[in-house]
Image 1 (cartoon, helix red, strand yellow):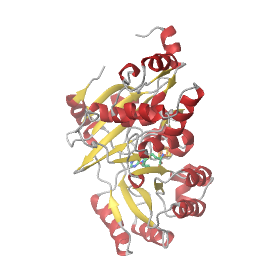
Image 2 (spheres, protein in one colour; image 1 turned 120 degrees about the vertical axis):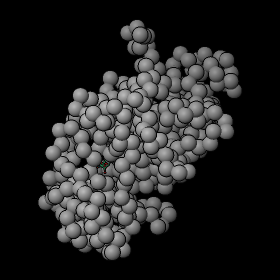
Image 3 (cartoon, protein in one colour; image 1 turned 90 degrees about the vertical axis):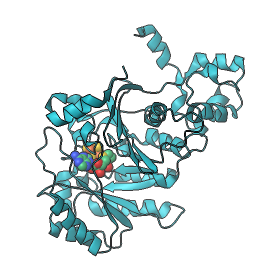
Image 4 (cartoon, helix red, strand yellow; image 1 turned 180 degrees about the horizontal axis):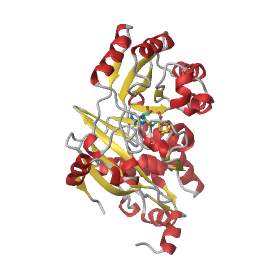
Length: 381
Ligand code: SAH
Ligand code: SF4
């Protein structure tokens, strides 16, 4: 246990983990040092996985001592780690202020996708989302967002030379609405793309939004990552119910903002991923698939269907495999590229929309889930 005095001292230090190259350069200039130090420190933190400033040996002793007084490299605290039988690994992470978020690493052949959280809870209250049911409890700092990448690599010992690039893709699809934590999310994504940090291709970092249009318009000016939009309905009447922010920014306004984002990218051939969570009897009917085809005609997109993942306190049902196939077929026949997201990490409640709901309400897990998860839990502390 750290004493309150020690933690107050700690929190007043600058956490270097969340600083972009520009911010790190400014930090060194502000303390009267040369800005090339920023490149060295970035590599220590994000290439070598070093948190102890003392180990940053190409920085002179005097500067190391100075840095230790005013700065720190503090990754978020891992509360627990769970491994699924399908190779998916999930971490629960404690953020400043005490809240918990989760991140999930999903290996698929030669790729591995990390699903990253941006907020504790979410204020937007989509009717089918367990994170929304928690309400909004706080924004993650840039260090806590990029810290999820850092923690994942550390847990696989992937900072060691020769361990290759463990994380090939990042999706901002964990807890929270990333565009409502704009500056911190943009800074963290900057580090994901930065060669001195993680060097992930801009096409392989995806921000998913439920449609915060003014923030999406701003994003077009500062970011080149891929875009996914959570549509879930082919018309405003239904989307108003499922995704309440639609009442403020309706579908046509949202799709135009997505178009502007794509048009602002330097490379042509970019498309938006349209996410559509299929809920039995609500938005999974063939007529609704046809309506979606009409809505998205001429819109540069591919479509990702996500069969609804259940969680305690939800009355929605997952559609049958046949219903998913029928919906999929209508879209494919109309010429769309359509993928169906397979549920990964089901035995550890790591699927879309299930994150942390069970940390909050473990007692309501099904016995099957509980047994599977507990058999494989690795308690980190
Ligand atoms: N807030 C952002 C990103 C996080 S949610 C957004 O809404 O886009 C990531 C994706 O999972 C979104 O498309 C979201 O609609 C979907 N999702 C949420 N709850 C779900 C559930 N219970 N089952 C299936 N998909 C869900
Ligand atoms: Fe928030 Fe996204 Fe969940 Fe909606 S689906 S409540 S925006 S996290």
